[in-house]
Amino acid sequence: MHDYLDALETRNPLSREQALMNRLPQLIAHAQQAPGWSRILQGVHAPEIRNRAALASLPVTRKSELKTLQSVL
Image (cartoon, rainbow, N blue to C red):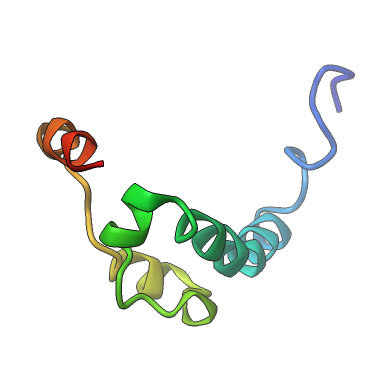
């Protein structure tokens, strides 16, 4: 393809989706180490977040909530 596109970006969509979902539990676990995110993700079992349905079950953080969440820290 084009020289400026990363090989990871030009993967087969199914391969890309699988790789992203495999990495998701690690990213969630890492986020849970941050003070603010640990509150937001309280009760979330990171290894269970392996697909879009599980991802959709995570709490949504609205922009309007950010100021309050940041002031609590």
